[in-house]
Structures are given as structure tokens and as C-alpha cells.
Amino acid sequence: MNDSPSRAATGGHASRSAADRIEMPQPVSEIVDILADMPGAVAVVLGGSRGLGRIDAASDWDLGVYYRGALDLTALGTRGVVYPPGSWGRVMNGGAWLRCGDAKVDVLLRDLDVVAQWSERARRGEYEVDALLGYLAGVPTYCLCAELASCRRLRGELPAPLSFPPELAAAAPPRWRFHRSFSLDYARMHAARGDVAGAGGQVAKAIMEEAHAIVCQQARWVLNEKRLIGAAGLDALQAHFASIPHQPAELVRWVDAVARELDARGGEPLAPPDSLAR
Image (cartoon, rainbow, N blue to C red; front, side):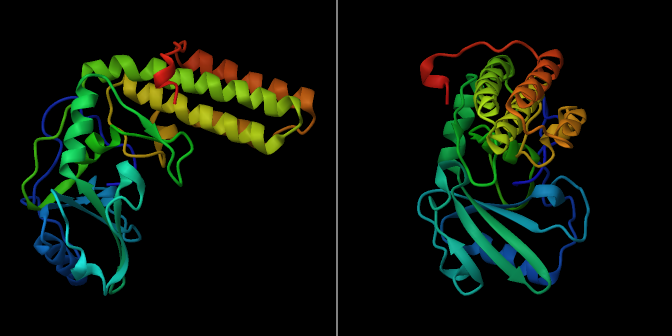
């Protein structure tokens, strides 16, 4: 669920069912049964790299629990650290970190009513961006649509995933580029003061924001930032971080050089209304 950019989901049903047999360790299979039996649970899915078919023995098992109303997590209480709904914010919601034999299992909770709400907003080309630990550019609310479009259903039934809406493909890129320009402006302010960490951090954020703009323009769902820069074709910009100057004037020129490359690769930002500049 919470891993890398998914394959393009511009049409059709990208979510796969339990009919696609998935080999999993017995302890993980037992956890799937426990999750499916929790009062309030509607469906259990496999997400992350394993859900996308990227087989790596070292990968965690990301299990998503879609639910409606109240969810009784009592069955998980003795198996690891459990965070009830809302503990991780309105988008990431909550979950649990479990150890099942030799396997590490991350459980992610998803309220289907919340998923439906943000899916409808995404259909209209609307979304919001929340600050979230581990994210540079923030997490867009349409990531819930991306999860549903890329997961493998293990138990229960789910609504059909949303193909990337044309309205979102049109609205998101200029807005992400507004964020990109804002970050670069702040990078220059940090640079003028000789603040290397501040300038570098804002530049990295701007690159991530341009990457979001590119994949949205291509109508591709994205789960998170882990492989986003590569998916957007921006890996060449990594070289700018090999040697960051420390003198203010040189640091400003460094920021400007990255900004020119981003301008060349992307489009021009359009300032959204104040209510969207978040």
C-alpha cells in the first residue's frame, strides 16, 4: 500500500484479486485471517512492492484493512504495536507494526468512507496535501485512490478502483509546480544567508514536487515518494547534491542551476487560489 509509484492506471481495473495466488509465509497468512475476521473489516489487501508484484524476499508485508464504521482491533493487541484509526492523520489513518515469525508485517487501516470522499474529490480534480512524517513534499489525498488501484485483494470485496481522472491530470501539475516554485524561492532565501541545510532541503522538496507534477501529467497514480524521482525521469538531478557550495553567492547560483533544469524539464507553474496554496 505504502510503497512506490504504481504502473500507469489510466484505465481498466488495476486491482488484482485473491484468485492471483500469492505465496506467503504461514504466520503472515494467519494474520490475514485475523484481520479479515476483525469486527468492522470489509476487505484485506496486499500492498507495497509485493502488491505490485516486485518480489523481494527482504520486503515487508504491507497489509491493508479496509473498514467501515468502528473497527475492533483487540485481536492485534497482543501481536505488536497497534495505532488506532486517526493516530497517523486523516490520510495514513492508523495501523500496526507486527513481527510474524521471520516476517515483518505493516498493517495499514483505511476507512472506506474516507477513501470514497477523496476519490470523489479526485474525480473533480481536487485534492489536498498533508504534512506527514517521512514525506518531503507531503502526502496528497489522492494517494488513497492510488492504493486502491494497485493493491491485491486477499479477502472481502472492494469498490472498483478509480482510473486517473482527466480533471486531476489537468489540475494537479500546475498546482504542484506552484509548490515547486515556492520551495525554490525559500531555497534562495536560505542560500543568501549561507544556510546550506535549509537551501538543500527546499531544493530536494522542489524536485519531489516537480516529480509529482510530471507523473500526474502522465495520468499515473503514485503511492509515495520512495521511487518517485526516478519514475518521473528526474534522476539526473541527483548529481547536484554531490557537491553543494557553502558560500552564499555560490549557493544561490547552485539553487538557480537546479531551478533552470526543473523549468526545462517541467512546465510553468500557475498560482492557484490562496485556499489551495498548501
